[in-house]
Image 1 (cartoon, rainbow, N blue to C red):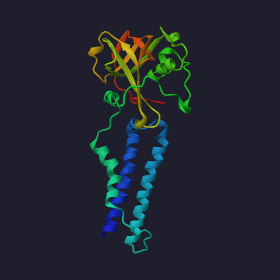
Image 2 (image 1 turned 90 degrees about the horizontal axis):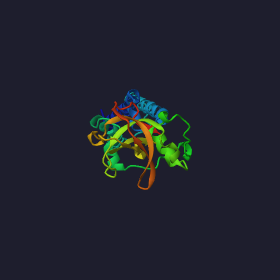
Image 3 (image 1 turned 45 degrees about the vertical axis):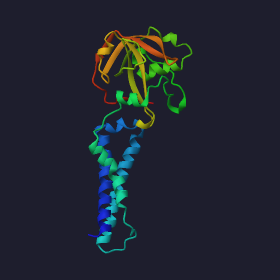
Image 4 (image 1 turned 180 degrees about the horizontal axis):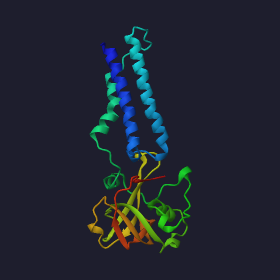
Length: 243
C-alpha cells in the first residue's frame, strides 16, 4: 500500500475512533463533566459527523483501490493526523474526573454568582430548602437587603474546601458552575460554621442543613449556614450547576 493510501486509512480510523470516543462519553455521562448539558445535541451531531467523514474517507480510498479517478491527490500530514488523534490519546491516558477542590485552588473562588441565562439575575422564588448553592449566592448578590433571608433553613450539598481566609470552625461548601464548558467554570460556595470543620477532608461531598446568616468575604455579602448537621454523601451524577 502506498504512503498516500496508508495515511488515508489512518485518517479514516482516527476520525471513526474520535466519533466513537465522543459517543462513549455521551453514553456514560462523563461528557457533562466538560460541557454544559445544553450543548449535548451539538456533541452528538459532531460525533456522528466524524463517523460520516470516516465513511467518506474510506469510500475515497476504495475508489482509489478500484482504479477510479482520485479527486484528492494530496496526502494528509503525519503531524496533522497526530493532532487529530491527540484527544483520543489524552482521553485514554488521563482518567476522566470532574473539577474539585484542587481546581478551586488554581482558579480561585468567586464571591459573586454568575448571572442567569441571558445575563440577567435570577429571581429566587422557591422554598428555601429547594435552593442550591448557586441559588443562595444569587439571592444574596442580587437582593437589596439579604438580611431578609436570615434564619431561613438551608439544605444543600457541595464539596468541602478549606479556605485560609475563614475562621476556625468554618469551611466553604463549594460547587462549580458552568456556562459553556470547564474553561469558564467558576467556583462558588457558602460559608459553613461547624465545630468539627477541621476534621472534614478536603473535596468530601457533604449535605449541610441549618439556618442561614449573613456574612462577608472580601467585602461581599455571602450566605453562612449555622450547620445543625453535616452528613457525608456520594458525589452527584452531575457535579456542576449549569448556569
